Amino acid sequence: MPSRRLRVLFLASYFPKPDNPLMGTWALSQAQALARQDIDLLVASFTSWVPKSLAITPGAKAYANCPQSYTWEGEVKVHYPRWLYYPVKPIKQWAYANPTPYLKLAWWSAKRVLCQMVEEFQPDVIFCHHSLPNGWLVAQFPAHLYRPLITLDHDFEEITDCYIHPHRKGAIAVVVNRAWAMLAVASRMQHDIQQLFPQAQVLTHYNGVEPIPKSLFDNRRPLELRKKKIILVCALFAERKGIPLLIEAFHQIALAHPDAVLRIIGSGPDEEKIKDTVNRLALNQRVQLVGKKPHSEVLQEMVWADCFALVGWNEPFATVYLEAMAAGLPIVCCNDGGINDVISDRVHGFAVPPKNVAATAAALDRMLSDDAKRIEMGIQAQRLIHQKLTWDARAKELLGLFEMAVSGQMQYAA
Image 1 (cartoon, helix red, strand yellow):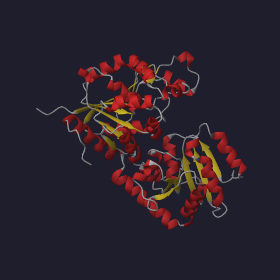
Image 2 (cartoon, helix red, strand yellow; image 1 turned 45 degrees about the vertical axis):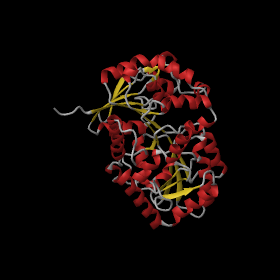
Image 3 (cartoon, rainbow, N blue to C red; image 1 turned 30 degrees about the vertical axis):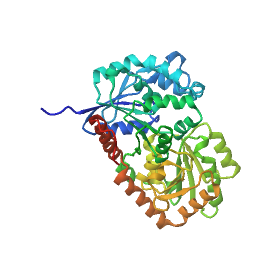
Image 4 (cartoon, rainbow, N blue to C red; image 1 turned 90 degrees about the vertical axis):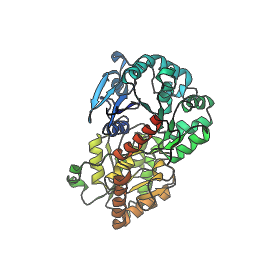
């Protein structure tokens, strides 16, 4: 008789909701890629319980209006059970250094549904985005529900803050002691986990990207963007993303490149600071703040652009770089981020020191001054994506890890 297909339970609390489809898009893309493999996949995204009568902000409404289940493109059915866990200020700040009491509340509110899910689905392996809270929940299972556990962490500071918060380190140690492997999206993060938890099996597993739809390459630029050299940035308007710094750098080279425009997609808490920077430098005609856009429109903007620049620091492995590279764009990034694990400086773009306006300006100048080099770097960037960094390629690697875990192989051979 044919053997049963591998069954994977995938837990990701930071996952798109029908009313907030831009939340954690990479988690959905990864789930869709896993669903294309020859496995049975069950996705669960525990969602904060918010009564509709109290939902005022867009974020709260996305939680309150979220259905119990929803089927995304690619036949990925996601369950959204409720729990008493709220990853928002000030609760998140309070629980960050001493997470266990809050994790216990999350477990109390989720355990019945989660244990029932495991009983009914009978997964062979459990895959969790983030050690806290999802990995910690699985570590609470009674012995008869134990399955090989693999976690994937995405944020440098969530790991490195264990050096200064012993209770946080203790909570993650609970996960380490139950996990078959801890995955990190960058080698720098892998190093930190290994330093903090020498007993852990830690591996680096990069994010991926979907190929850009061919139809987008057939659409011509809008008339107002023709004959322009477009530097594109797409990011949350937050301090760590370094958008005011990028504007300062663009200001330094704008006179030398009168046909260049800096086109910025996004929104967020730093929006006024960004607008003030544009006004102070009198760049209103050269810097275009186009607001928040749906993902499909962001991809179209990438296809229309000439290069992509995001000089945020401590970027673990931002998938936006991969999307830009898939569109054939060379990138400008900081040299402290996880993307440097896979790109080469001056081959796929330029890597600059964090928070360095002069180095960023020099990189933009080089990017705009040599059309042939810029185009060649874009070709190399797109080639790298197609060869190694599609979601399907990353899912196949992940599936190999799942199979090793299920077979009882305790060490991974790189």
